[in-house]
Image 1 (cartoon, one colour):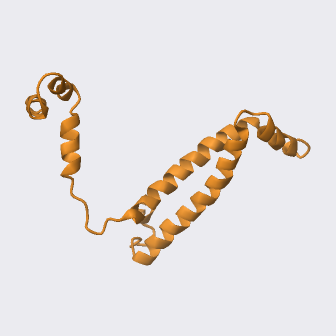
Image 2 (cartoon, one colour; image 1 turned 90 degrees about the vertical axis):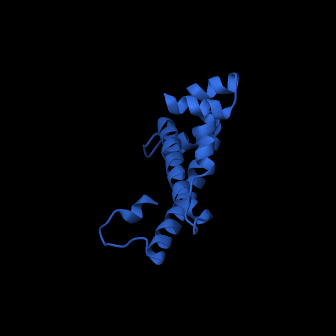
Length: 132
């Protein structure tokens, strides 16, 4: 508890100290400002995370589309047409799913090709390169 009390005293007095004692916001931002990062850190490091976010969006939109899709040879086209016309924002979910698939594929190919070209995947069979 002593650490939280010191952080609360450093952050301010009154309401700010009360908030800092219960939720160390000032300490979080101070730690974030002093966090050391590698010198070669650039925006290309974000592509793995973006691929993960795109995959999550694909799963979510796929679940919503699967709720309204009928996988029968006679009803498949009509169910897609119903998704586009009758389901509220169904057109947006369908197009997000379609564009998200291409976006995920591009990010996935870029991330793995960069990892193999730059030598991030060191040992065959290791999971090091799959982390992003």
